Length: 341
Image 1: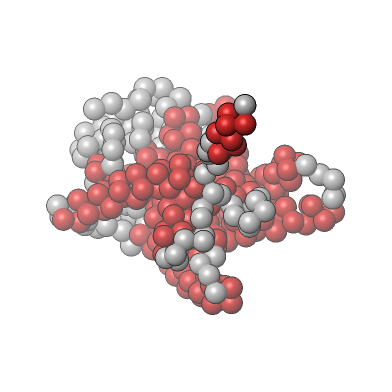
Image 2 (image 1 turned 135 degrees about the vertical axis):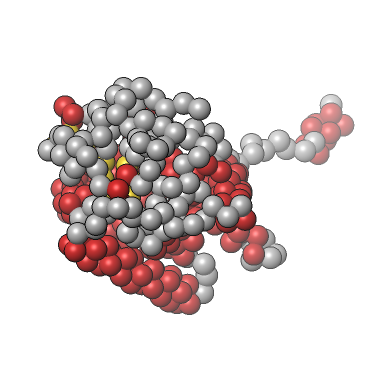
């Protein structure tokens, strides 16, 4: 009996493996980063990174001024994001979450062409902005293999990291104020309050972009669209989807575990001998989270656009850009029919 007890006492104790969400999100981050690097590299190497011209339609002065204002603000935002992240990292002597969002947020711009995944020109940009066409045809599963003409505004795309960081900070600040005002409010309540705030603010900014022809929402569902049939039509569900995405950025920054880690960093072992390994793992985990959130927003809007109506009116050449219609491989006017290969 004594020997038996001794053997049982000396037997190894089985411990439950700790769940490490960072590994799962980091795996997503690796896949998304690989897709982005492949698409951008192939786009440049094959010579398809060329500007999309504005075409024969003259660009009105107001739209040209708006384009330079938006691009100038984008440059300022990029500088702010870098200065904020560097200063914060130096103060805390570690790579902060904001720095990870700045890097990971910039990289998720690779998903942008998927906005027109099912329908060409579901959302279209103004080719007067500095652009080099689109890397869309090199993305996995992209339906329109020849759509290199979509004029993705590069300066605006490069400010995504700073832009999403600013939105995350704002959303986080709203949650902090709500938590102080109503100490017993649940996490769901904080998220709901932040979503409501974004729903008030987002449509004003979005409509300003639309009115300046920075981008336009086409193939919108008429019953769910303000000013339906006009070139400046605005689908209400675009505000809902964007506000939900912005709220998720704030929630990711606000909700942390006992170690101060956000969802994409949870489970990282910062006691490793090399400080580089946990830093890279955290970056990939945060990048994975951001890709999932932005991808959900992009594909939901792309899917809804399948049920939208035709493009309103006679669009100017600097908005249509030969993406669809006359001279293109895909029609623009077919309603409720997805685009296939």
